[in-house]
Length: 332
Ligand SMILES: C[S@@+](CC[C@H](N)C(=O)[O-])C[C@H]1O[C@@H](n2cnc3c(N)ncnc32)[C@H](O)[C@@H]1O
Image (cartoon, rainbow, N blue to C red):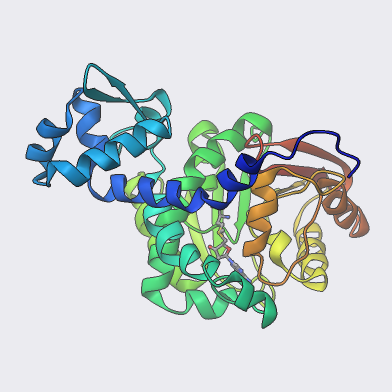
């Protein structure tokens, strides 16, 4: 609007060919390219022998990865970029490649490819109803394993943005794999948490929590937030889900959280929240497409809903830059 710049076709082209980058990353993850390159820089011939692949198509993939900046190329050998080394190599503690392998590839991409159809039919990505999606144990497992890979880092970021130390009993509503509970309990030795989610999700969460050695502090409770009850606590967390709920359900859930907290207790809503004028962040704008029933929501809107049920002093803060934000508020 009123823009005096020359139109740049590359702006459109980079956005509209973004799917190629997704597919290149997925292929490299499946073929273990990053894991092998992380051990030592290799040329394509050496890598092709290790991976038992034909060198010619592999070289095309390597050049694409270098063009994307995910690999560095020097004297014919490839090495991982800083980000690849940190986030896409399985042995890294910050690895989140399984999010792309499981959730993006198997749950999100098939539906994103027919987004126009879903919009015409007034339907949501994956399912209009989470309980229906999670009723299939295999789908629940794939989704939650992927979510865990992404949410461990998000959970860690959350612990740097909110002071969990005054709280003893957190309720991790729609807690999925328990990634946020794990991050919060690890950095706050006196905190315990109960994850509330659907039964097939909790089966996966219980295994993950046991592997972390936290089963004595992180427990589970099966329930549908829109229908069932959940335990009391002094901190209610709801991460990456409630902005996708219908307004009546959001208010009912926040109202129930309020009633389950003591005076001085707190709620954290961590979500894909838009900025005040709904122009970004880009990833929040894109992820709001995965909402089942909700409308795009800004941090200010979310704070308003919390105030409506009685919470006070809402604080809005970015959690993962350019991606997620939280609103934390207190019960007076
Ligand atoms: C995107 S995942 C987020 C999981 C977790 N909170 C995190 O931040 O990693 C959304 C989760 O919400 C759960 N969920 C969705 N609707 C729910 C409902 N009505 N009751 C309980 N859990 C629900 C899903 O089963 C899933 O585990």
